[in-house]
Length: 199
DNA sequence: AAATTTATCAACCGCGACCGA
DNA sequence: ATCGGTCGCGGTTGATAAATT
Image (cartoon, rainbow, N blue to C red; front, side):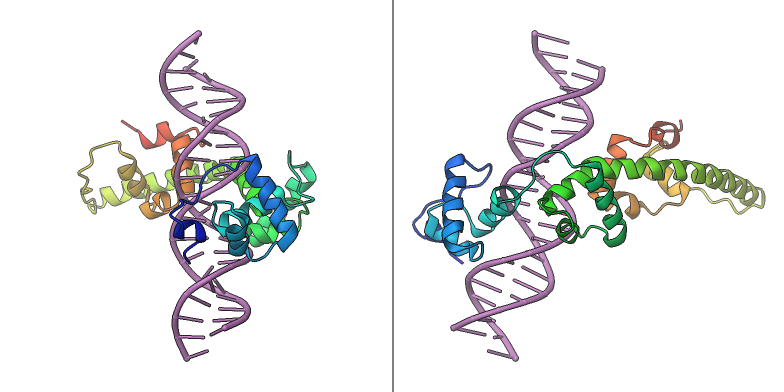
């Protein structure tokens, strides 16, 4: 689809919305309904794509939308529904009137995920202590039995890759998700230095 | 007080599904 | 049946405010 603005040689705007654009959008959505976003974008004269208009309306301008802090009740519902449905933000949002999927997704990422991780960390720390203890015992036995093979490691001692591999974690499980990348970057576990950088 | 890091959130992007011609 | 336009969703990015060094 080639938009009118593009056809006229005008560039579609991106980035934060101005008050004037908001007013224009409200006017045209009131007039034409909250469907046909590409049409609204074209006839309103807003130099935005339909998609952008839709998002602005749904996340910010539509009536009955709640702004501000998420209550503890809402938080409980989010936790419960996330447990049930996973990252189905739109679905979760339907159970929280006035909240948008985007808001819930952001809230989850910034607040709840950390809480969940803290809980998981506690469990995991207990688990990994047992795991490491068993692993060391096993390695010693294997070594003593003459089954030791030198690790082909060109990245030098003490690197996270070596440490992770040595622990038996698949490296993909650590690096594939941007969530986990940040997870390790932020060192929320608090013990990454002591575990990963054993010199 | 300045520089740097971290947290937050609005907005964008890519993709798949749906729908009508 | 299929093709183009549109919509909705989930993941990701980037700007900026707040906190920390």
